[in-house]
Length: 131
Image (cartoon, rainbow, N blue to C red; front, side, top):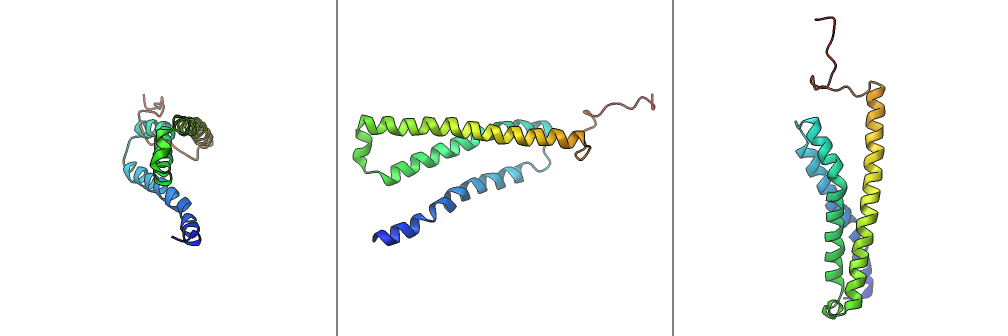
């Protein structure tokens, strides 16, 4: 393969990686239809862990695909890969929970402004006039 062909094809890699994440988002959106709010909140809170697992899978698959087999026989190279995995876990979880925190804060703000109304009767206060 010519270097030019490889470099042109490598430009498609980010789109492939984001495509995997977009498939996860679409799957979660389809799964969330007609689910209870408390279940959705739990999945929402766990979503950075799901993203972290996907990122680790992508890192390790790319490392297997791009390295020669002797790469894994070297202890120093293996340690470098594990250090990369560790950094990816920390950064992905930190970034993921930052996004979850912002989204949850916005959710609470929109609830406070009465833009989002709870449609679950268990969570709404009981009207005292009817008693």
